[in-house]
Length: 126
Image: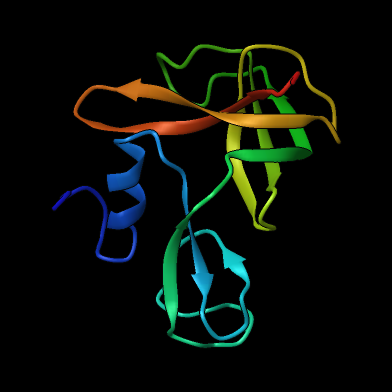
C-alpha cells in the first residue's frame, strides 16, 4: 500500500506512481469528480469508485506566472485549469509548448524525488 497522501487521496497517488491518472466516479449518478472526496459532490452518494481517466482534456483557463512565489521556483510557468474529457476541471501546470484556451492537452508526468510524480499537461497535437 502506498503511504503518500491521506486515506482519501492515497489511491490517486499510488496510481500516479504508475503514470496512471485516476478520478472518482459516482455509482449513484455516474458523474466523475476531482479533487477526491469521501462523497459525491453532485448527489451526496458514498458509492464512489476509482476509474482511470483518458488523460485528455481542454484548456479551460490559463495564466502565466512571472514572479516566483518562493525562492528557487523558476519562472515563467503556466498555471491552468484543464477540463478533463470525463468532465472535472483539474488545476495543473502546462508544459512543452504554447497553448490557448480551448486547445486540446494530454497528461505528462513530472518526476519528484521521494514523492509520486505530478500530473502536468502538454499540447496534444495528435
